[in-house]
Length: 260
Image (tube, rainbow, N blue to C red; front, side):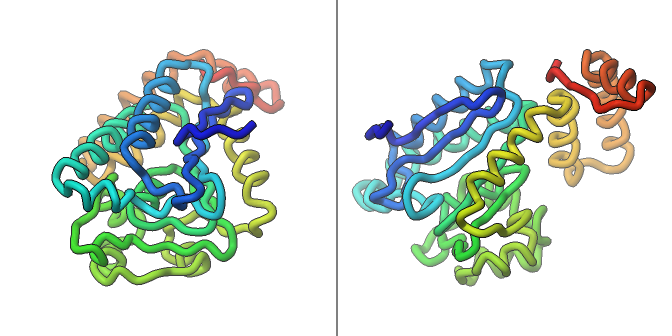
């Protein structure tokens, strides 16, 4: 089914798929898309049946960044109208237990690359091009790039990517740690969906605590991180999945986690 909606939200069991849907503009984010992204994030956060989220882009690329037409018409207001809902959507997704997978092809540039960096797992098609791009139009970054990039590639390489505005191919992106792995374009959708379903079968509360522990670790000293780990373990120990995992271990069989 085709639709003119700027974002398509679908379910495949416990996996929710967010598909950015402005293929004629390489999915450049305009205000309706930014608002739709926030609405989708809130809908998914309220649905306890969602155990993994997959992001993808319709057409020839994942996302070319923000819609420069919005910014050129009124730079300050346009930036506020785009950044506000995008950043709030990321806060909502970050607070969820469900892991976030990005399925990337064609191009990931500007806000598209920033958004990709927020995913827990990134699968990229061969031939994909990556460029943070903000410096090329005379601005700094948004959508969490300055938070994610140094954590993924280190400060020295993050500054290079951000300040030179160069384009990288998929092999370079994999070497630097921008993506988890590069796959043939014809296999991208199937492999990304399979990964999302694998994650959706996991102990969802534990996965959520793991992603928050890892993301918060660089902001704490060792004592603070140990406290955070202890608190998270106590949360996980109270779940049904912890008991399921223990029983499966002693019974020497795979655990069938429920996400609770």
